[in-house]
Image 1 (cartoon, rainbow, N blue to C red):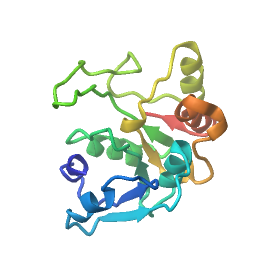
Image 2 (spheres, helix red, strand yellow; image 1 turned 90 degrees about the vertical axis):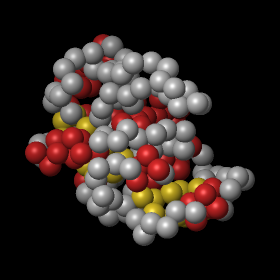
Image 3 (cartoon, rainbow, N blue to C red; image 1 turned 30 degrees about the vertical axis):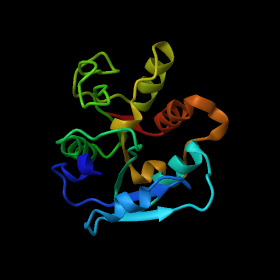
Length: 179
């Protein structure tokens, strides 16, 4: 939460979907006095992909990102991504480079750019899908920002198994460009 709240974009909605956890998530969230934070606890665990799909559709903001409880958001992350989405209406998804951070906050790897290309680029959906099939998963979920209208009727599909995030990105590439 602190990494999200420290971001340079202040006009945000933060929705926390507690997937029937048995820890003190409610207490942690209650310790923040911020009207942008909304907390909802599910009575039963609906699974990782079910909960993440649910999260995609919470709120009303025009752009959506999903940050799992073991991820941090880099300060300044949202600004450039939102600018790209606003500038290019064909973009359904914008993502960024990332770092792996250890339990003590130490950086375990340098910046990972899964595109192996220029820091700021746009691909047609077809280019994104073709390159993804030729290479590897090219988007890190923790860095993805979606246009809400691009995800209105899609979600993470349980039957896609551990690659449900990659499958969602590929499905988006059928109709939208990727930045």
